[in-house]
Length: 175
Image (tube, rainbow, N blue to C red; front, top):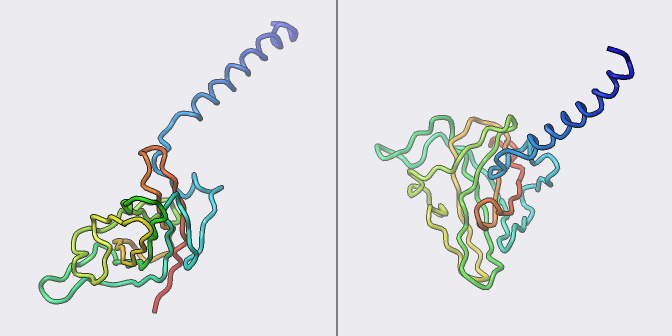
């Protein structure tokens, strides 16, 4: 094959390869944002109000615990319990639901909120979290995670696939 005929095949092949790459890179599930996907997303610091749609979140403090409650009714974690005290404010003119939050480790591992045993915690936000118009609720959300630093993902509770999300840095603080 001559150099001239090779060049005539190379250009269309490279174009087809590039088009295939573009099509494949547009596929995928964007419903759960991980810290790797959020590398261009602003990560907010604890103590800063973070507005996500009509909801504004503010992480006030964190606390690590080896169990929830005491005595025979105590709940023991797989790892350790991370209690995150925060406020959520509804700036909408109607009742909103505070959506479930997700905690991400530095490696991108996602952890869901603990729902079992949270009744043992005074001021837990609980599972059903409705917030009236222009109301602020203070409470605690709980995660069962290894000791470490995390990013808390909060969202506006919008339509699935179109939610607005933000990340809040949760550094490791031991008392």
